[in-house]
Length: 80
Image 1 (cartoon, rainbow, N blue to C red):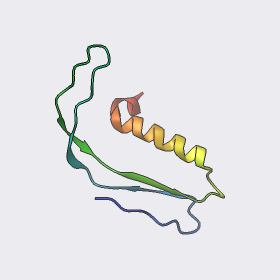
Image 2 (cartoon, one colour):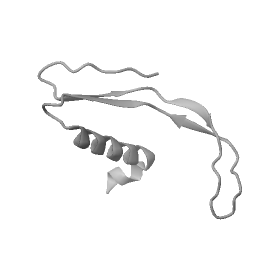
Image 3 (spheres, one colour):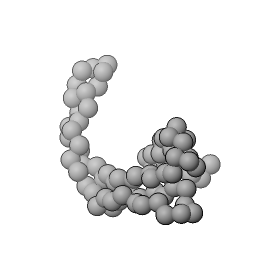
């Protein structure tokens, strides 16, 4: 379901994407009303970025992973 990728020259970075798994996620608490939501089933996946620090710095890699997460959570954004 998940793995880590190894960078081989001349690669600067590689993204390892695991398979989707259905998991039970506990419900969150609504801040305004204090009510707790019911647990739900959610499909989750793993994504790991291995990067050569001489090519890609950590801040850029973190930014890339943040944007990737947003696109995966809201696929319609990729169409804009």
